Length: 147
Image (cartoon, rainbow, N blue to C red):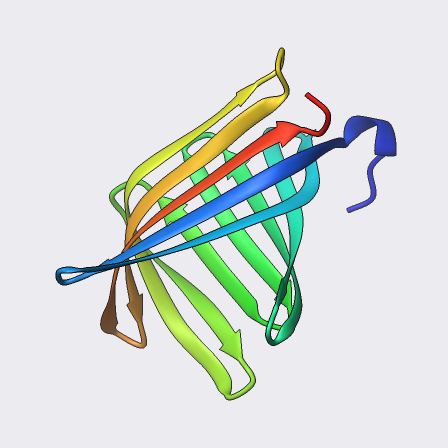
């Protein structure tokens, strides 16, 4: 999806994932750099991360109260979120494709044009291959570089 570089805002991205399973909680945090831009009725946030498996490029598409997260590269994932609806997705591993589903309990996405910063806040129950994988709280914060 080629668009003019002038329309892309370079941003610093902080991704925090908390996974609740029973009484246990695991938290992961990533800080990286990416781009924010708008196209038609949607906002996009793209960033790269380096994992043990290799490079992964993530695209977060926000359209109203709907969020789509696509990950490509060393791993592939498609997560789709609609509030209070169970949505199918998938997770591609070197060993095959796992079917997932997510039930979004909270979707909060906001972008401030003045400060060129924003966030995506998702709370959802995740299932992988039909088994409960816990409750996930994903927070993605981004801010224009140098501000």
